Length: 354
Image (cartoon, rainbow, N blue to C red; front, side, top):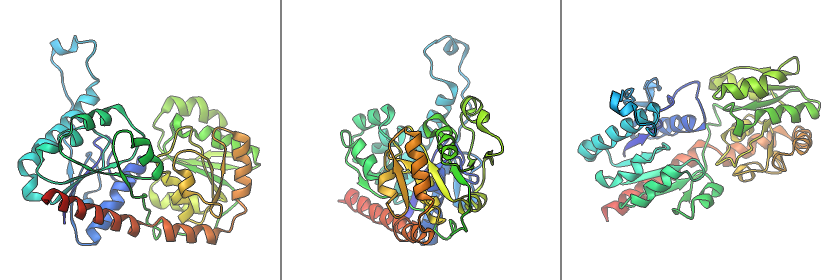
């Protein structure tokens, strides 16, 4: 098939990945191409050119002096993203039918959904987040059916008041995320932002008597300075924003991976990545994490309870790493995800033709 894959205009789809959405988009595109599909990825400048990227033109918007006087005007970065997706959808309305068989909207922007009726192509849209106002508003005005996919049962349930979505669990490359030797330290990976709450992971690890490494982009610098920096020292180390190869080494050499969200994780990619390395997971029981972490692969704690998470760290670190790795390769691999999306694309195309 000829597949148009719409990604985020804010962060490049390339190493080191800014977050799970970018990693998911790259993996999906890579493996669809490996199966013989023709994929074009519309993504932010700086994305991996091996993915056949067509850059979303996020040209800075310069409002006129008169427009600047509007105290209610949207931020300029919002306008730049708006123009990027508006330009893409208008171009697809003109030429998309000649270039593609299906559109897969893998972004969080509202315009691909709201403007789907202008493009004479079937559209598949993946829900990566809990309900947000802009996507809900797009659903209200969309007159052409879009096939919706949710990344977990939890996410599908969260959206069911607005749209029905089938579930395709995210996948990971279990050859790239390979088994590691384990070690004595804990590890936390992800975007360093308040809703991921790495400071709680640190406090829990220290309470469990374990040193911990942190890795990920400092997306909220104020939060990092306020909550993380005072905890750093001999027992708590920040490794920086690492690419996949370095993350595999770090996670594979850990005794346990700690996942500490204070929001409902739509999926929890870092948990799946850790399990592929054979590293068991200790996590708060939030969002989709109970769908991913089993009694043989980790331990779950009451949300927000640092002492309970410390107990989970101790329990998880005693699990058999080979069982953890086996579960990941059997249930969380990329081949299953790609096959599921191929099926979704074909059904969406058949439905549009009918």
